[in-house]
Length: 610
Image: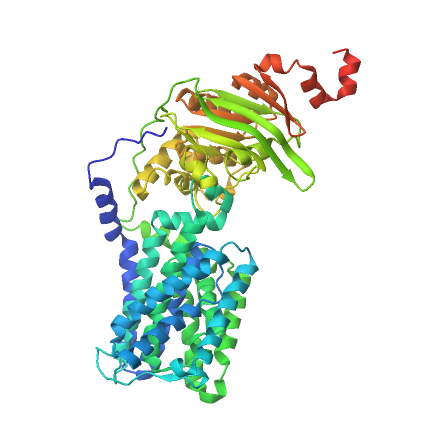
């Protein structure tokens, strides 16, 4: 299965996919909606309305940039204006001290912000839940205090005035319409980057990491790496917008440029519009910002702080009535209507050929575990467990509940590091590898399922399988074709466009196997894939596992369905209390006294005279 499908002629499939996207009605509708952001203020001739739409473009761009890390990757950054402030201050200081045009200064600020983002993300992505959010707030506060402290450079709390050099070279204008053109261009840029990320392998990877971190790693995804790429892109775009906004405001102060309230606002716009969607942050901003800006314009100083009330009210209403946001709730329905227009149908991908044969000589060792010991405090979960998997065989692992079988699996796939002992994966050329992380095991051809299924619930069945296929296929088109082939193989083609979270347990088990198969493994670790299934589904799974083994894939299966595992396995390993107590042919192993004691107890054995 490590062999690749025959590729299409160079440029054929990708070009066809690109052309279909560029001529799709969705694109036309998006362009028309964006054009209104220019047409409405230009047609009105009102400076105030131009200001409102500049503000909409700025905050929509900030929310879209934030959404790359906060929506796609699921990392709730509440200190994101640190990058906004870096972009603004870098550009202003380069103008003041070196006379450098802001068009270059904003690029330098974006590069600096990307580096800072990586520096923040590298330690903080190890944190989970609210701790990551608190860490980003802490970084924001530190940078704000530094900006105040170095008053000789930044102007401190008194602020910094941008040199008022008029003209396009300095991004300072008397006519606000020019600002609108730049703000609109930055919005289009952030939307384009967001769309490119969402529709690429990186976007699928970020969604997988957000949904199920462990399942993503099992599919060969280096979760820290993809999150660092996301924060670097998000930080750079945020800094670009911050640089422009500084030129628009012509005055910078730490309280504004490094504002926690602004960070919360841009996150809120994305939440209202729909996290993890391309157009959600824009729609959220378009809904909320005009209400607040118009209220402040009409009521003047008496409306000071009213924007916060408007934001809070809309957020409460959306959260209570539309928890998925505007796009999350209505997006599929609207895109369905658009797709029904002429030219809106997406071409069906052509499935890749059937499973390819795995290389290597049958009967040779492919995975060797020696003396695995894993302790959790005073509990020894595995005690000197050793086993060898041969190429092309099915090795069954049985034992009573709590015997340590899944702990062994976690060590064989990199999810747990043994306290002592080694795991070696042997490739087709005979080279021995000792990987240390789950994604490294996956890249070496070790695929695994989980005892408790871990689907990417908000993705479709086909998209779930594509997450695995991306390990061997870089393009979306190739991954989709490979995923369709696997979906047909495991009997999920009829539900390929259904959200994974809606599948029954039998379908989820097959989906777990399908996603693992899509990684084209040479070693397949199956953890109770027949548990909870009907007799008919169990029979289909048995046939599927045999078909997989016939391609040369080596299988280790944990199973409590004794009839199925006995009929499938070439050899059986029995584990009890973290130790291997028996190993050999299935019929011989089940007759051993220690195995019967493990399952039925010593009293039963003595009573039967065994």
